Image (cartoon, rainbow, N blue to C red; front, side):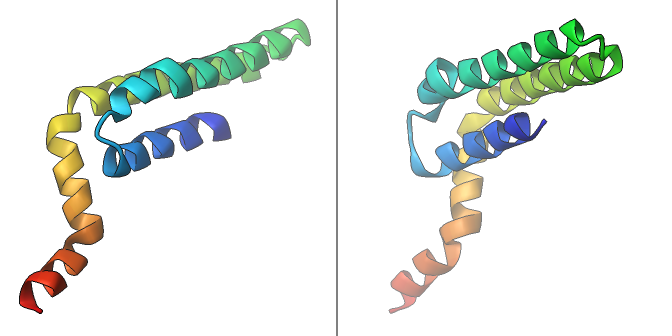
Length: 96
């Protein structure tokens, strides 16, 4: 659960600081998060903890949906995030 939340936050941070965040995220971050989650789901299923496995499977599905939506809307989301985080610095530089 924490790995999935961390991967989503990492995607937003990559949007802010890297222009090619989608490629890095698709090739490195998302597969690692999916493999870790699938490994934990299988381990829980072997231990017969079906509710936890189902919960983790739903979290993985949610992660994939949110990641897909964020990657599709990267073109409009990236400038807004950058302005929100660094807008004060830009304004101070223009005024000075």
